[in-house]
Length: 183
Image 1 (cartoon, rainbow, N blue to C red):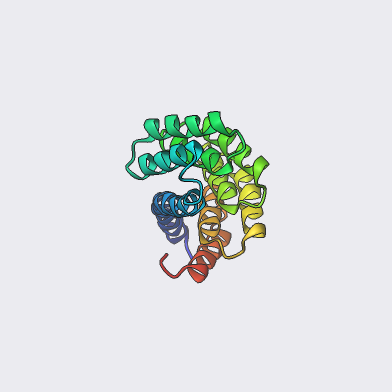
Image 2 (image 1 turned 90 degrees about the horizontal axis):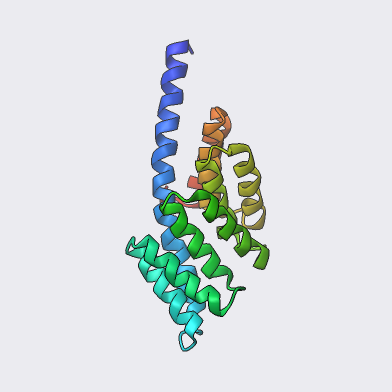
């Protein structure tokens, strides 16, 4: 393969990684919404369930500032609601407030270290801050928790591409496709 072909291949991989990252953010919101909805159905009578549900709805409707405010209300009632922390992190990520998002994801992870979605979301935020090596560690933890987490594999591919590790990125994308044929 000549240099021109290598350069074109790198551009193609990077373009695919960028598109996949955008798709994964949307899929992450959908997955997060389903997870949160499932956990809040039983708590719908409590104020925290209501505020978290409102945050989820605002997140889905792309009202990110309002979603953060709703999650904050839920967290005033219960600082140990990992899903409210994770939802707040996602909303902050969409507002390009990556440092705040990472802090929220860290709190979600501290409360529930087995929440692979929070690990994936933290990895995506780290990668957006060009902290791809740190993102890799975080995404590997998500994969350790749930090897079938296609979002983790996809985001790992993006982080690897940002590190110019294109062959490894392709393998990670292949694994994302293997675990979820919708990629």
